[in-house]
Length: 134
Image (cartoon, rainbow, N blue to C red; front, top):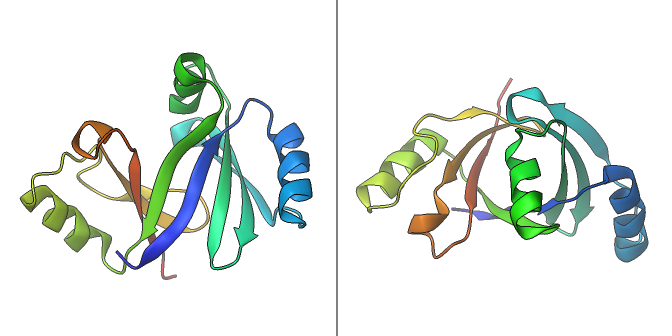
């Protein structure tokens, strides 16, 4: 794992949260993107070498809707940049971690992604991210 790529924050209202984080970070978001497969709208802020990803549910069955219903708004996941997501999935599986996704899938911000189950990572939802090379 190369670095913390972003921290994902579950929010109820992405427009209100964009305003809040613009004031907090002193700069506007650089991208809003819908990820239909996950039922979320995302908004990204650059913060030094890292990013903040705001996540708003777009339907009641979205993992973000369920998260907010259970825990309220707040930190949802931590994402790490990797060079080879398939090799990293294999390495982590061999180390005994439980993967939610055993194969990478397309995520927001031009990334391939895979999540580790929080039951195997001390309750922290971990995302692996690899840039998609077009």
